[in-house]
Image (cartoon, rainbow, N blue to C red):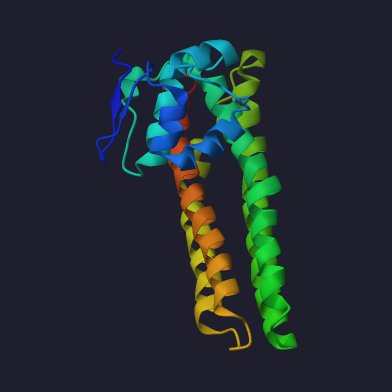
Length: 234
């Protein structure tokens, strides 16, 4: 297997690349380091050394990094091994916790700052939109964990097939709801809501939307092919 990955932006990712060089080249990868529980400081160790130290599959780690950096990157299905399954599920579960415990509450903090400058009607509408948005996302996570992840993790206890059709359904709805909130902040809030606060809120909404898109790609182009190849093959 060729462990070196080239993204569309010509960033070369290889196991012998220093971990700090990887982060310097794409600081957004810090969120992957956080989700995987990789401990800092990590000095001058390479990606290969870090994966060996912390028990991560180096090829899978590079795939996840490439998919995070490059929205159009697709792993080669022939390079997806059965032993990657549990690590991918673990990463996706960790991502759910990252969204629920970090990104959504952080965005909510910015929302409250905006609401302090809004009239009662605007506060009610925006809070309802955001509360519906977060409930939808959390509900979607719970459905995936119960209907897909749990079946994958319990595959040795039976021959139940995982229902990957869930991956085909709701991610466009999350996009649409993110864009609805952004549109509301752009167009409908009173002038009393400061532009700086609106921009901060929008940055977090768009960052969450884009990260959820990457999350959907990991499910669609990593987990789903692994399930179909190694669990649902019969």
